[in-house]
Image (cartoon, rainbow, N blue to C red; front, side, top):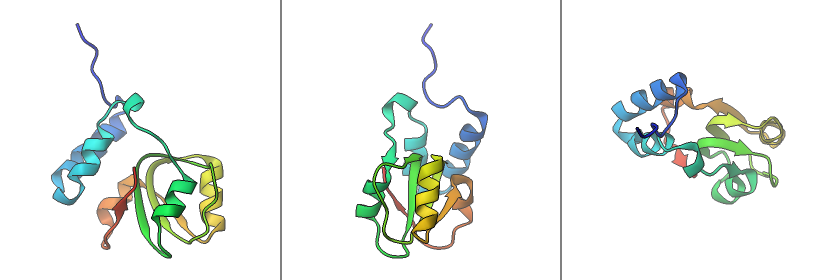
Length: 112
């Protein structure tokens, strides 16, 4: 019998269901539903290249600390490494859990 693929964390499963209800975040929900081995983590260097000043970015997975970030950006992600969180906050940005994305009124760009 094949093993189920995808997330087994009940919190992540509930978040995926909530995101699927909102058509804007259907692509994000699809990415979060992938197995962990199919998802790549996003490093700060990639966020720095993708961001504009005071931009809002969404990472469907974990943010890692490789590289530096020079712009103050708001980042919504499932998980942050401790060093990545510190570097984002030192650059003037903020880190938010992905659950708060549904309450966001502004447009956010997905970086995967």
